[in-house]
Length: 536
Image (cartoon, rainbow, N blue to C red; front, side):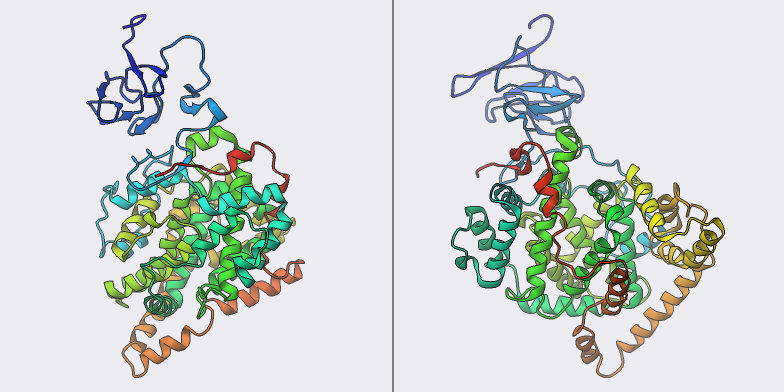
């Protein structure tokens, strides 16, 4: 005891003496020392702490208080209740996971909420997995929580190296490596070489034939199913906590909305095309460019938001967020069809998941986080949905930015415009539920937009569309029709229409280079850009 407090003392193999207050920061229970760790453990709820006080296992999120007086260069202190390392001002969870490591506790994520558990969602998912609320943890959902602390290890390192050489030069080297191979880049940084080692060598689980089968099946979803995927992605971007914060803070939707929307939809369309992931295909190269853009945005956001935001919420545009997007894109369209009678087998769902899993791999998702089958993916989506949170302070900003760009300042004209676009929000409600749409629009000029009768009309039209496709599946040459649909991009007509509108607003092409200047002009420590590597 020291000054009435129970003190835990441990001298490590380097002779450094660690002195901490041996009370769990979760429930204030006395800690026990585990010599096999070595670590401090809480007998009540299982929290574990390193000998220097860092959290190793939840439910605790705060490090142990230091017991010694004064300060030491390498000690861990608390700052607004969140653990920080004084040496380098690094958070103790700012590293990349390795096999066998203790999983990090979930950052301060949104609490589980039933906002997203709409009747539409339950109808899609209940035939496949338990609708338990909150969902039971699984191996992958525990990894999902852990990987909210990390970004894209390889591309984040490339962005840091490009900052040192100049982003323009770095992009030229990336493009040369994409076109002619990494061997053609004479002065390639080690970080770039390591990235292309991953890109040029598909993982052992990748099967090109299964991937192609999954691509065709994904393209074969009905128009209603594809709308379900796009609608839920839209709601996740504007309402969900992590994505709406990143999208809002980056400022792209307010300052350059046409390019932001055109790039997103073009990418969605392109990855559905034949040969999209062939190493030399233009689509493969654009997948890598989007991956770079995400890493640049993550670097800029970490500097903009600072250490406190990381300590509370983990990494912006995290590895988990990227994987969560991929599993959503994979399952929502076929599940929407299945819920309306156009049934799909588990085997076909597995193929669709394989298709999106390899795209997630190319986008930098850690291999251990990628589902190996559809049921694992569905469980991950369910966890993602109930912890999506929102709306955030950025939701209204994003919606109001869209209104500023698209609605007239004349009150009468604006009212007419709102009536004209009301069917769009009825369609959103048909897929995502009226409650989510109201949450999206609540602090905007669209707050009182009529969802009915448009929601009902959209649902009836969707039922007819799925029925037509269901009947077509039983007519001769169904497989030939599936292959024919897969020959062109999934949303080619919509991309062409959006491209024409964007061109009228001065935007043409999708170079995916918007964040080159974001990183070049950002301020702060370069070390904060890349998660610390922990050797296996």
